[in-house]
Image (cartoon, rainbow, N blue to C red; front, side, top):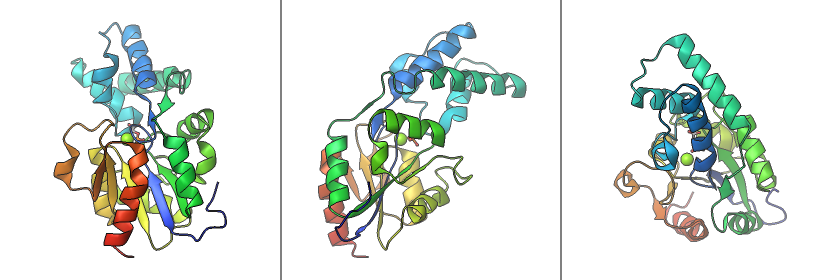
Length: 231
Ligand SMILES: O=C(O)COP(=O)(O)O
Ligand SMILES: [Mg+2]
């Protein structure tokens, strides 16, 4: 879905995990499957949540470090490959959009915003999940770290995503984590932080342009930003 007949206002770029969808149950399922195969204790959902944000390789690396497994190249690569296989079997088994995501995206698209996704989840998996959950049609561009060969916090990941989506004078990023806010700051793009995702620290301290508790609060935050920072 693109911006239809309404005027093109600009591009809203969304993070995926912890912003559009709650993916931690399936990430935890895959991680605990890997731990079981390696004879290590499971993490469960709360501990897995803390490992999300920098992509699959870093999630696995962080998990092994927490289990005091010294990172050895071949064993590490094997663990990442195996995690990827386990995760591919359950991408959207329990993963669900947060409340009001679909209605709010519809409203923004009808209002003239181009929508895109910039995630550290690999592109193929991000597309499969969004498609399974009926959300892919909103996003002409869904960019993972493998799409342009750069990953958040590198600002090029966000800027390339926005420019492939049609760019426009105005870009706003919406994300849930420290990585998202630093990516936006490095790109010079205003950022709306959502408080319900997987951040490890209080996000207000990182000075996002807005901090919202619900996805349905995003249109108002966008209007406020558009009024306060005219492009
Ligand atoms: O896969 C991750 O670690 C994070 O994904 P996200 O960038 O969509 O939050
Ligand atoms: Mg996220």
